[in-house]
Image 1: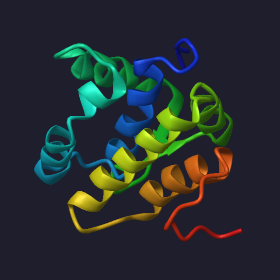
Image 2: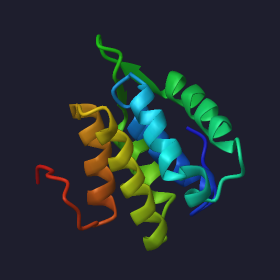
Image 3: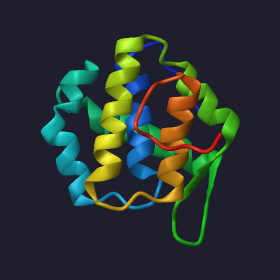
Length: 135
């Protein structure tokens, strides 16, 4: 998995992309929620840069994960920890977690793989949130 500079817009956007792609289904509701939130601007990406980050991330996922029968992505726990470690700024962490919750919630169905991403962020960042994660 490629790495990005610490607290970079790309590192933050990749975590949001993982939350969106975790269930193996990129829904219109998730894309609409992303657009409505102004995620690109919130994360400091240039206009259109979101697609570059997602494309690069999908390449990384294809070579570093395995998919379940339902198409959901199972990312290695060490890789997940490494992704979370690239975002250290508390304000950026809150933005990323809020955006992740927003896109995951958008299709009104939160599956296990999405919860894994949300809980990893909350746990790694010691975030106080409404996310109910197992200990």
